[in-house]
Image (cartoon, rainbow, N blue to C red; front, side):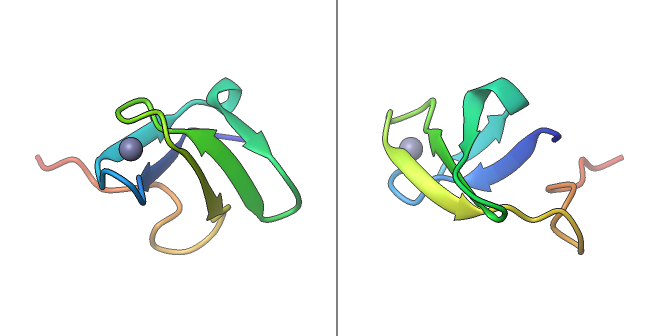
Length: 59
Ligand SMILES: [Zn+2]
């Protein structure tokens, strides 16, 4: 697994989640605690496609 980047469904800030900061519930569902507002949020695990690597940093 790799770092997941998601926006929190509560506070809408980006969460950068290292593998030890989220929990795999099943093949495609992940649960994590938002570092900003401490909400526990669930999201689909995306391993392929345009969003797999998160937002690109500008250069
Ligand atoms: Zn949050």
